Amino acid sequence: MVFTAPIQQHTFAAIDFESAGAATGRTDVPIQIGIARWTPEGGLGESFVSFLRTTQSITWSAQKIHGITVADLAEAPELLSLWPVVKQQLQDRIIVAHGKGTEKKFLRAFPGHGFGPWVDTLLLARATWPQWSDHSLGTLCDALDLTARVQAACPDRQWHDALFDSVASLLLLEKILHLTQAWQAPLQHLLQPDQSAWRRQQGNRG
Image (cartoon, rainbow, N blue to C red; front, side, top):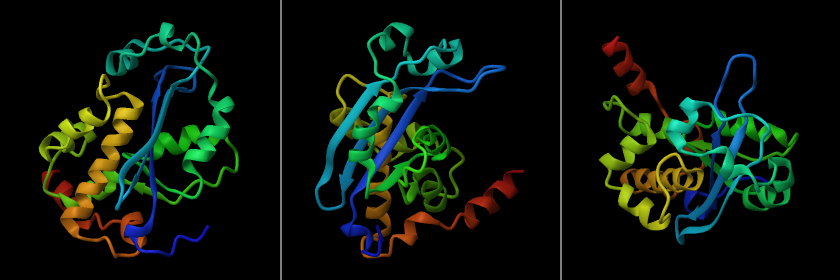
């Protein structure tokens, strides 16, 4: 699909994975997936969240962050079995993630899926607020008064829940677009944000 329309006319789908945690001698694996949709005109829309089965143990450090336990995964499906749902949620959408590396890595479980293009709200935040020292998702949402909106959209969930973080990424994108008034800009405006000012700030701090 060719994404030639201005930003305002696209549908965006944010994705987030929580993982079992990296450990010596093993590859990290996803244990929760969250996907949420958003359009500039309609706001938040359909969402999906699921724990994911794995044979690996969850590291103590990972569990301390997201609170997911082995018991939570007992009846969970494997990621590969969710292909129809993931495809339905992400196909022909602009994919959003805050620090997209992890999400792109875990989606390699579906070879040749073709999802994208990708908008990274971490890079957008650095371009929008280069003077800030912390661009983590929670810090940004607190500073921009977005956290209460995320909580309202995801009751009974919290930070480092895959759906909560997905919704937070979308509301952060919405905030950036409101501030920059880039609704009619081409999609490329979001795909390759100018981080030069942020890089200079990093150099000054060094």
